[in-house]
Amino acid sequence: MKFGVVVFPGSNCDRDTKDALENDLNQEVIMLWHKDTDLGIFNTEDCIVLPGGFSYGDYLRCGAIARFSPIMQGITEFAGKGGNILGVCNGFQILCESHLLPGVLLRNANRQFVSKNIFIRGEGPESRALMLPVAHGEGRYYADEKTLDELEANGEVIFRYCDEEGGITSASNPNGSFRNIAGICNKNRNVFGMMPHPERASSLELGNIDGRLIFQALFINKRPEFVGLDTQLANF
Figure 1 (cartoon, rainbow, N blue to C red):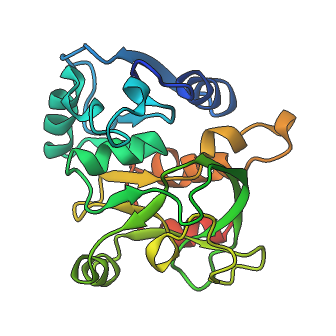
Figure 2 (cartoon, one colour):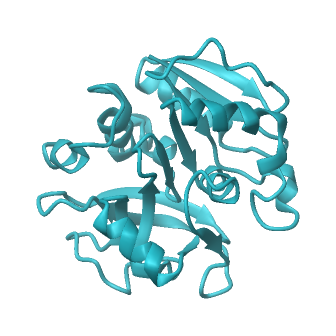
């Protein structure tokens, strides 16, 4: 499969993502400029990644300008055909602003930028805690109660913040996200967004490959679907 990594003005995790996918996971990577409009080289088995950073300087709301970037029309069409989309941090914010995912990312509850290692886990009872870094000032996931209930009922909550033992606690929530939500997918399970950075935890040289496990479970080991994610992660 191929991965396309979008570069917006202000992206700062695009090369980290390329390095993780290409060098740590041996995947083909094609860099995409924000003004590109033709995604014809990708098929629905492939994945487009919206990386972290500060697209367009994060003026207005984070991701609010990037949603109008020329490439987003192609990405929306690609998602509509069943193509796989992954948004990380600012990429998650862009997906929400583009209404490819429900909800919004608000300013952290403590009004401070948070940059540290945290733990997340899947929804399955056997899923173990994975350590990943976060680096954001607006990562507090919010949706109304009806939307949150629907996300949970449909199995669209993929990751929640937890402690090192996997316990879902308020103390383990780094930004005040509603219901400790760290990552979600859409109803068709082909668009995924998360605030923690798997690309920054995919190298043995960095002392952590938990992020590599996420890429493998979501996209590489099988057809890139999110079904069975908890079981896959539990086996690592």
